[in-house]
Image 1: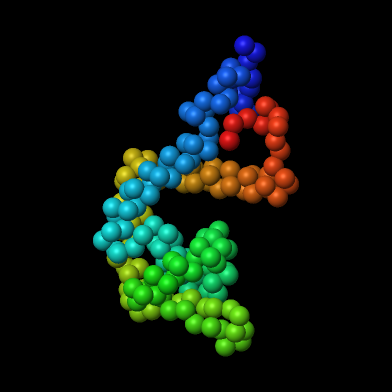
Image 2: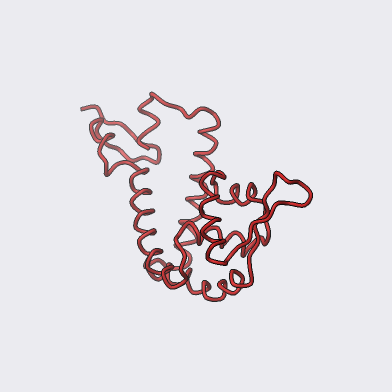
Length: 171
């Protein structure tokens, strides 16, 4: 068979392009599922799910935010975010209130309990890092490359992602 070349110099046979183990999207998916499993165990002590933890991270970092801005930080729409916020509010960690300036906008802020949970959460990143087996520099480098990948894919999606060409490679 005629060989094909992936960007970055990886050579493979045409039939290999459709192998699951050649798909970067599957490697990312598998890594994400593995991370979720580790986070599930670690976050159990905090009483949070992984998506709830992400919401809390944004609020700990930025303070009170409109739901729309919170969704932008998390890359989530309000339909996905609203149930998360309802559960966090029921747990006493956040409060949602209509904005006095704009009734259409809902502000989300931490409660005292939500703010206090931050101290207990400080151990989570260290435990995750230990779980990876990577050194701090390796984690920073991987994160930087993943950020570059996200930027490139966002740009491709906006441009109407190239398709139909084997030169584009597996996804």
